[in-house]
Length: 390
Image (tube, rainbow, N blue to C red):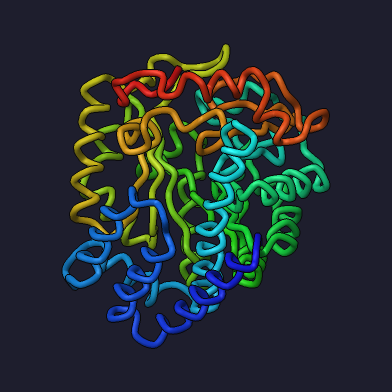
């Protein structure tokens, strides 16, 4: 995990996590104070202050979310998740050092597609452009993670296709790289009891389950029966006290529903701890432009998500409307990159072009390629960070 000082700091923080289990409500603010001492980036001070204020107010929505982490999540899973968060925290220091050393972006997270195969045929799916016959081998996936860890990347996000088509290999990767966190964007239909038991065993995998609204809205894009399969998947994870979240794509058809108080309250009742929010982007020849949300709908979502962050016990991330928090575009390795099931190393999941392939180049060589260096030189692409894309 780096040098002796890094290991010593990690050991101290790991001991502090054990201390948390005894009295989390009183000890979380103390841990935040310790983290702030170790974190040399003063830009995080505002976040530490807000978190500390939240954790000392029992009625605060963030306090209620943290309470759910302690009441609704398996203790062993929670302990392992916090340990891996600390590893990611420590790895973040290496990201900056390697970025400076190699004069290139080094991503905090790597998004990769184990397969382009999928058991559904969702209307307007951006990933369908790749077809359904591409796969990265287990060894190739393993090597991507090995290279990423050397650079300081410990967060691996899986998409597709449907990544759980390869769920046996995913569990193997979780076992081998138990210092990493794995998140999968999944339609949820392949989640069963055996897979959930495997997740409870490895303790470093979390799904973001795609859902488009209630039954009528979800099945409209994803096919009849998908909504009920999602409800079953959430129930299986909830019964085992495993964390999960929702992946929400809002379109012209469902934006008002997805962004409603009632719907977010529904997600919270199902047990979702977080929600990724995406606006529909038409990609490929079979895209459906009529599903693009209007400007007013995007504005509606912008204000609703910010309201929810002050009132509801769920963590939300809005892929486009949050550009102002991350200084615009996060692609091209600035915070993440995408490796598709053919091995092409793309700057973004929604930008289907590449000048490098993981079968021919190392991850570092790709990050220093002309395409990725152009991203580095030109970010942010727009001073209006509500229009972050190049």
